[in-house]
Length: 225
Image 1 (tube, rainbow, N blue to C red):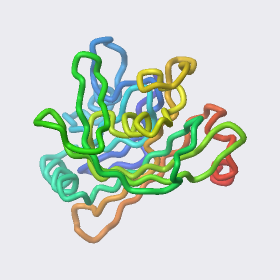
Image 2: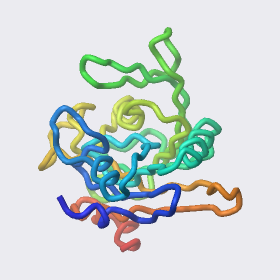
Image 3: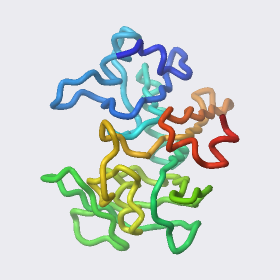
Image 4: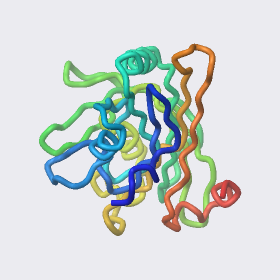
C-alpha cells in the first residue's frame, strides 16, 4: 500500500479529505485488507470519524473528522443536507431522460448486502432516498453521469441506476453483464463542498479521476486532464 499521504488532498486541525483508490475499503472489513481509516489514523496519530460511505470497488472523496467539534459540525451539515456530494459514474445504457430528480426509497437486503430502489416507501424496512442526476457526456459505447446525493443510503446510486436499467460498468452485483479487472466499478466520488467550521469559508474539493483508461475516453474528461 502506498503512503497514506499520497491520498490526502487537504487537511487541517479538524478534518482531512482523501481520494480513495478503487478496491481499497474505507473501514476495516472481514477480509483484513489494508483500509483507508486505519492508515489515516496511524498517520494522524488519533481516532478519526468517517462522514461519507464509499463502497470498496468505487473511488473518490472521503471526509474524516479529527475532533469532536468537527464531528458534530459535519453531522449537522449531513442532517441539514448542506454537505454537497457529487459522483461520476459510467454506464453502457442511456436513460429515457438525460437529466432529472428522483425521490423514492431504499430497501436494504442484509443477507446479500444489496439495496433495492423503490419509487415509493413500502413499509418500515425502507428509507426515504433522493438524488439528482444528469448525463454529462457520451462516447460510442458509454455514458458519463453526474449524480448528486440528497440523502445518503446504502448503495443508493448503484441501486437507482439498476432501477433505470443503466447499471454501472463493472457492477455485477447490480446487474452489469461482466466484472472489471480487480472487481473495480466505475463510480467515483468526484466533488464535495461544505461550509467550514468558521461559518465563512466554503471548502470545495474535486477528486482526480482514476488512471483506468475508461475514465478518459470522453471529451469532457479529456478536457479536465
